[in-house]
Image (cartoon, rainbow, N blue to C red; front, side, top):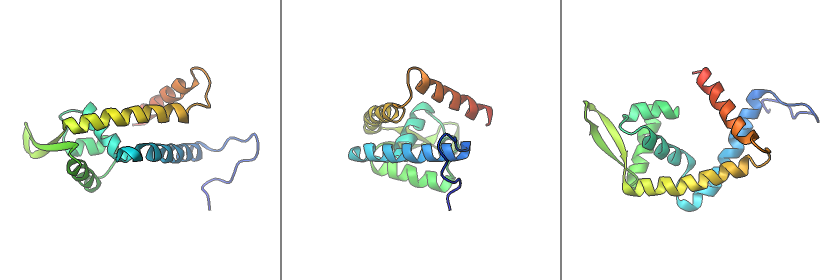
Length: 147
């Protein structure tokens, strides 16, 4: 049974339904568009996070991505197998690993970034004028306020 019945004409569903189904549709779009590059959306998101959070430990990046430690280890293993990242001992704590992008990883990040930009444009094309940017800004505001 769906988490919300199909809305009648003119009725806007609850927020949870909207966020869930928007995420599902956007995930399907990005999966399809990234597939020819040989990378999954979660892998690209990890590369992006590792690039933006340079020098963070695996555990810290897992927290930023909202995934558990076991999943993060498997994800980093996959990225390392592809030659996109390398693990190095954390300079301040030898018990931790720092994960760094390789040249090949930075190249995949750039190529995937162009695909992700196009996915955003395609997904938000139904919104007119500044509405797409406003939606992104408003969602960011809500997320930050609820951390």
